[in-house]
Every structure is written in structure tokens, then in C-alpha cells.
Figure (cartoon, rainbow, N blue to C red):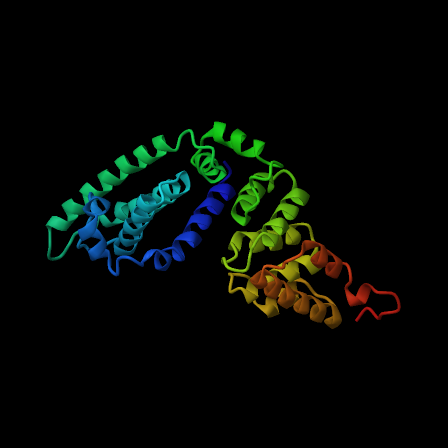
Length: 289
């Protein structure tokens, strides 16, 4: 698994975690009330401790969601939330409490427990055929899972933005054209509800820049800017990609259109391709500046 693939996997999980919690809270209004009704969901954690509170809360609610919907996908989400919690605990366990000295021991115990839970969940998912689970095993370094995942290409089982992005991570260094098409396909698969994965836009911009495709590099950088992603300022973009004002206006308008089409679930890569080849300065009879 390449470093870019591991980074992509981390981003996929982080973004899904951000929007998870509000959707789960219904029957129980607070985490305390959930723990009172289902104490097993809160066992082995550093409860009543300010350290890792967000990660711990998210994990508890995900355990509850898995309890209600015991599928491999929910088990995978629990595994991911446990990893996030463990990552936090690894730092928290080193912090010396100023008042409650017993909390350091509690954090250490919770950290050890997290390793046991991760091992158990990993074993339970070892034979899962869910594409998301297979990709997770690949991202954790399992070569057999990489082969399994790649065999799913073309079967129709990878038709989600996340899985298209995952597949693109494999081709990034070996087939730029295919990577680009996979990323554009990922944008087509958004239904207007989920937040776009930043790596899709950033990779499109970076790849176009590397190929010296100034108009497309400017376009995707502009899209990234409109999405609030960490890209160059408009002034810097113009210095990087000088072009006639009419072309800039055309690409700015196209960037706005892309944002709207993704938000409404109607992004179309063919339309974008046509607009990229229809720069005003390249049309017959048009001045170059």
C-alpha cells in the first residue's frame, strides 16, 4: 500500500467520523444515559476523563450503532473509531494529571484494552467480502487484500465515491489517465448529500499541474479554493497559470458550475471535458488576449 493510499484511507475515515454522531442520537439523549442502559458499550474506556472525550464519545455511539445493526460495515466503522480513540490515548497516556493521579492508570488500562478490541475486530473481519473491509485490510498492509480489492474492479461493486478514490490511489503512480477518470467518476457518484473527499479535488489539481495542463490545474485549484481546501490564493494561481482574462472568466464560471453540480448530485465529467476544450482564446476568430 502506498503512502498516498494510507493518507487517503485516513481522510476517508476522518470525514465520515465528522458527520456520524448527530445521526445516531435518538433513543438516548446523552452518552451517560446510553451507558446506563448499555454498560457493556462503555466498558474498558477512560470514562469521566477529559482526555480523548470526543473520540471516546464517538466510539460509544458507534458501538451502539453496531449493536443495532450488526453488519460487517458497522463492525468496520467500530474498528475505525477504536483506532482513532487508541491514537488519542497513546498521547493522553503520557500526560501527567495535575489533580486526579489515578486517571493516568485509567488511560493506560484503556489503551491496552483498545489494542485487544482492535485485534478482536480485525480477526472477525478477516474473511469479510465487503469491498470497504477488503480495502481497509489492504490499507493495513495485507497484500492478499490488495489483490482481492483490485479483482473487484469492473464488477460494479466499487461504485461509490470512497471506493473509486481508493481504486484511484492504486493507479496514481502507474496510470495518470486512469487515475483522472476514476476521480471524475467518483465526483459523478455523489448524490448531493455527502461532503466531497478533499483528496479527489487536490489530486486532480496536482496531477494537472504535474502534466503542465495549466487550464485544468487552474480549474481544479479554483474548485478546491471554493470548497475551502488548502490551495494557492487566486493571485498565486494567476501567477502559476497565466492566461487570457476571457479564459480565466470561463474557468471561474466552470468551477462555480462544478460546485453546484456536485452539490445537486448532477456532476457530469463529459460536460466538464467539453468545457475544458472550449476555452474562448482557442476558438476560431478569437483574439489571444
